[in-house]
Each structure stands twice: as C-alpha cells, then as structure tokens.
Amino acid sequence: MIDIHCHILPGVDDGARTLEDSIEMAKAASEQGIHTIVATPHHRNNQFDNYREDILTRVDELNRILEEENIEVNILPGQETRIYGDLAEGLVAKEILPVNLDTPYILVELPTSTVPKYTNKLLYDLQVEGYTPIIVHPERNSELLSNPDKLYELVKSGVLTQVTAASLVGKFGKKIRNFSHEIVQSNLTHFIASDAHNIHGRGFVIKAALQVIEENYGSEYIFNYLENANQLVTGETIVGDVPERIVRKKFLGIF
Ligand code: FE
Image (cartoon, rainbow, N blue to C red; front, side, top):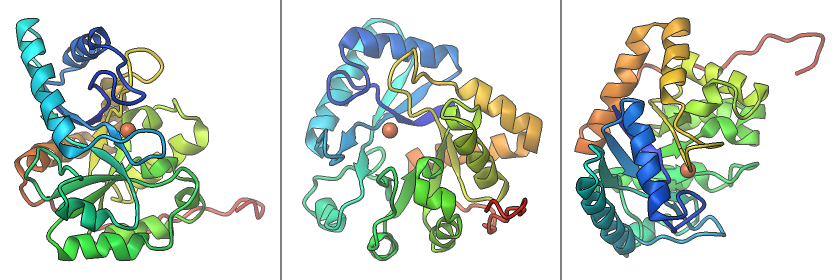
C-alpha cells in the first residue's frame, strides 16, 4: 500500500523530530502494510517552510538510512503546501514540489476554518497549467463542513481530495468523522492517507480506516483508493466516480 501524505522527514516540521522517530514511523507503517510513503512536509503554513530542493535531498538521505536499517519502506518526495495566492508562480520558480517530483499532482492544504476567496480560481488556473491539485483533509475545514457544496464544486471542477484515515475512525471527533463519511459516500474523495506525524497520537491508523470503509461501503472503495494512490505516484490520470452533492437530513431545524 502507498501512503500519499505523511510527515516522516526528521526535524523539518511538526512530524518526526529525530531520525529515530522517522525510523520508528517507517517500522509502524510497514506493520500496517505500507511499502511506499510520500513524504509531505508542511510548506508555507505560517510555521514551517520546506522547499523543493531541500526535500529532495532529505528524502534521499532517509531512503539510504532505511536501507541500512533493512526497513522495506521506500520514501518518495512530496510537499504539503498551504494554499497561497502565488502558488502557480511557486511551481515555476521550483519552490513547490509535485508528488514524486515529476507528476502533475500537488498536495494543497486549506486553512483550518476558511476557504480563501481565490481558491476556486487558483485551483482552476493550476489545472489549465497541467497540474492537478489534491486538497488534503477537506473534512477538517470548518467552512467546507458547514457548506459542503463548496467541496462539491471544487471536485466537479477537477480537483482531487484526500481524506485522513484518523478522521474516518473518529480521532478528530464526531463531526469530522461524520463529514468524512459523507465525503466518501458522495464520491468527493479519491485517496485515504495517514497524515501521520508520529507513532502515538497522530499515527497511521490506515488499517482501521480501510476496515471501516470496507464494512460500510464494500471492498470496491478500497480497491479504488489503492489504485488511485498507485496512479498518483506514477503520474497517471486518475478518474474518480461522478461526484454528488452532500444532502443532509434536516432535524428540528438544527441545520
Ligand atoms: Fe499533513
């Protein structure tokens, strides 16, 4: 299995702090059946910056060490970029790193509580330039939670999304769990990934999440998510099922 979102590079963000942490995370991933991890350090999130060339160097280093340690996990380069107005220029300037260096896919994080006004236009413009943006953990954005049509519109315009495994099993609370299930049911996501930061509070949880999906929606969903991750790292075109709007039942006017 390929994990497309993980903070496994040591000492670059709020993920692995040391090389020992990275090694522990790789072992934990391997136990979950993960053989390939896209390392996606934060970039431009007001706290951490990780530029393309630095990430490439660090991924090489970590792969060399994992090989020495006989841990059969391969790290691929990636980046989790917080959306910003000049993101397209950042790609041209080789600041931004697409998944596995030369695929058209870029992981984009929204702020926690808002969807900036320029989001739709920017993500559309990126597609015109030949890139496919992937919004990571849309289920954790409170504006999308209260207005899921916004997510539908983005996916309909060709944007892909990644739901975090821990969200599906309730580790971020009931609201986020319910929203992540609505997203899965409405074909508004294309990947399940760990977004693991460590082996404790923010671990992999992939096995448990896939089990929940299989029990609720069937193994075809799992197959599609795994296949999409394969196609992502090789840069193939990913075609999702037709997205649907999330329709919520109204109880006593609560919504
Ligand atoms: Fe992340």
